[in-house]
Length: 84
Image 1 (cartoon, rainbow, N blue to C red):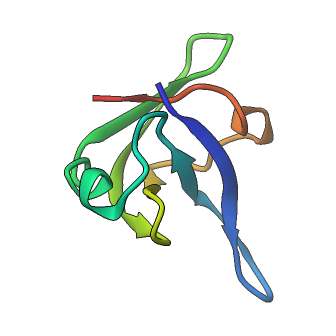
Image 2 (image 1 turned 180 degrees about the horizontal axis):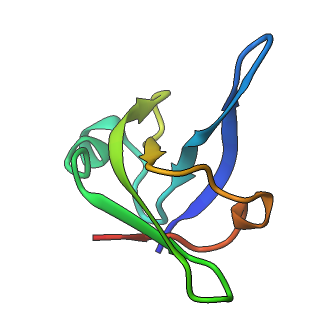
């Protein structure tokens, strides 16, 4: 289980399909690099699944960048995401 901390925001546009995620227990780039390519799934309370993949790293402390197929709703932030 991981927690999304925010969406990627540029000067003019918010990329709501890309989310930064912190995974508990992962604190280094080396540990986080093992998760690149894994599937990430968030399920909303109605049962709709949002599927994405871990596409890269952000920073030096193990934060992951996850790209979803469809934009996540704002209620998804700070809710657990399954990474398998």
